[in-house]
Image (cartoon, rainbow, N blue to C red; front, side):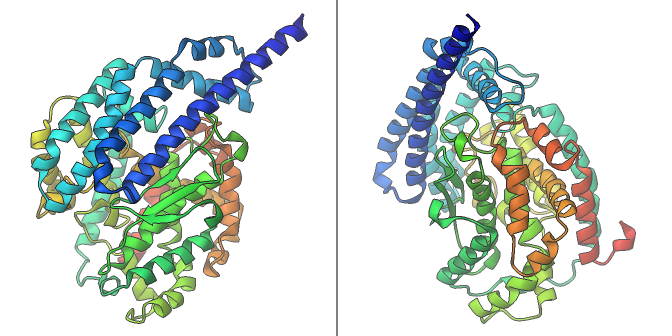
Length: 507
């Protein structure tokens, strides 16, 4: 009798897997259409593509929350604790419970509205005219606030955070940002007294875009990005996308012919995301276990490869001669260039921000989003509120909305709650990198030779291969031996920028 029961459980589990795989395929098809929308789709396709994406979102949602899915989840039983099957059930039940609270009408409408909002945002940014985007922002925000009303949380913003970083909360992030602000603001203030001449001159000039692309491809190939399982294209706002399996992970980037870091570090950033996705256990494909465990952990990889690797001395000891070969106009010694790519200079654009002030950009977005969800801030007042916080945290006021409130695509595509992931990622990037170097001391000397296989191997073994099997905090503790904490990140910033700006003894 026990064997019959076990067989029935196995049959139920197999049917559940098949159903979840089909749902995954629908989401992946939508991702392909979204990728095309942001890369090659002609302008005339906007309205039709919005309807297509809305249809796919509705179909996937209806299949996920159907009585059949609920029945399979109910009768799938339990699995051995710690097993892939147990993790799959935990994730599937969590997603089912969340999705079941949302009307199919709301899911489809959100997909349609965001598909229309993004091209409106592009036009508004191009013309630096908030009024062109504000009505779309109103519609997106209203839908996301309605979504939050159906979901539990101590704070209405918690529902947005949980989608990207399970287990996170407004309270927890406020605590993290207090610690970051207490450590970073005094450091920025100390450095501001020592800025003197502009160190970034070597990064400005005339840089052929084709040469930039070739150099960037060379860099991320050395990181381990597999071109047989990915590609790189252009987009207004760079992103990485996967389609439910590590065999097709695509990145996009953009270039500024006058400013070298835009394309180079943007490419390294997106490659970090892609390396994570390409390293997930292939057996997890088309299951809830596929992909990165959270956007905080995901951003830890984009920031690790962008900052801990591509802005480091070991990296440039190998790549600077090759950079000068690619761009003969670049002059000066390697130390001058290293100081240029790590220069602290408060700026309007988050994606071009230096490593030290970056979190202040994220902090102001977090605070604005919380205010929007607490109904203390209106969409009409966003540009003014944005500029006020830019002046408070960075000492500058954007000269126009394209350089201010319109610079990011996240609100247009409905990604409220995503921005804090960048700072969570910064914090985790140092904790993971230090654990990797401690476990494999050869990593740093290998980086000086342009070799990154040992670092990539450690990350694959301790982070990437696990996909979503573990909860985010559990994954970090397994990889580093301790839970997430801000201390290593703040000590890293103090050490690095204290040395760069000559007050090591003061920190």
